[in-house]
Length: 199
Ligand code: ZN
Image 1 (cartoon, rainbow, N blue to C red):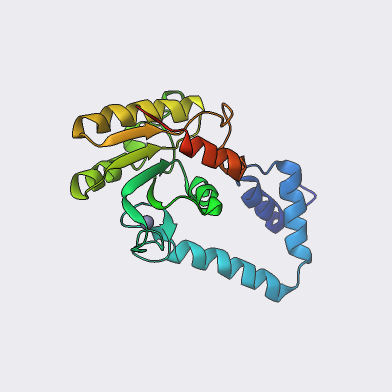
Image 2: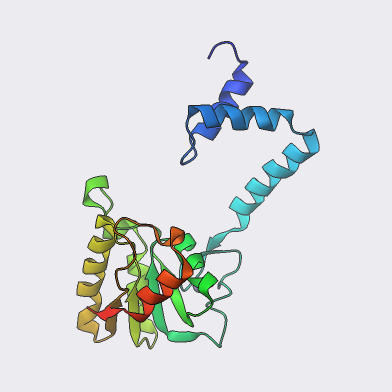
């Protein structure tokens, strides 16, 4: 790509590091940015940088938020004795969109994957166990994806939580195997929640 200036090459390289962006898309985005008005580019760059500076993990559920406690954890009308465990903040958003789930969440930020070398210490499991020993929790609903990693994580979690006497359940299948929660429609999500079974 020597026919581009090094600045353009560097911009293309930055874009190509993003998930789901191949070489062609990276070039398209880079040239789009270069054709944008200067102020718009500055606002864009500032927004990225400020989001990174201000967003942190919620003290209780580990979701991404800009306060110590996220709006869900700080809401007294939510059922704080029911915790739904999800793999990421996008899955939490999917269940929130249904507007029918009244409990709170715990976001793992990943799933156990021996193949990718991701172990229990690499996701926010310790934080969940600390929370369970601290707060009066009645039920943990495991809503990890139905991929191999999601199932592995669900098994591991249930073995860890069961001895504490807290009820552990798993959302029903109906969620297609390998399907990410965020792409599934609300009716299916709610059916999976209603049809959950004890582990
Ligand atoms: Zn929270």
